Image 1 (cartoon, rainbow, N blue to C red):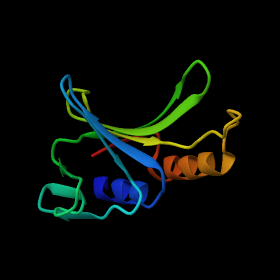
Image 2: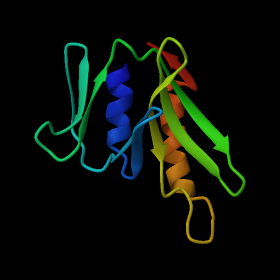
Image 3: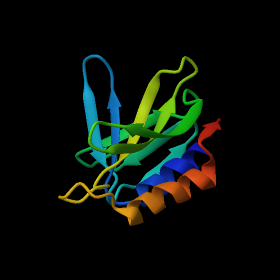
Length: 124
């Protein structure tokens, strides 16, 4: 199921995959990324390319669709957490608003369709 959610996210342009800890932040755009799984490891991107990530699928326990209210807009994401509730990976939908700060309803429909498919919170 984790591979399915990640695969669906990678099919959508302008989703920003973010991993971070207290020392490093890494960001990769979804556009044209490949995904594959070998045993417990899911690889996003091309191993020989300029950027890719390896995800230990055994350590991700929950995927949650989150709409976070900000002062001037709402942020839309799918966030992946470990057994301690620590975020491992965030997939943020970008380009959700136009230059006048109007919500792009077509992009919101894509987000809502995924949310409906997997549910607000999925346990693995």
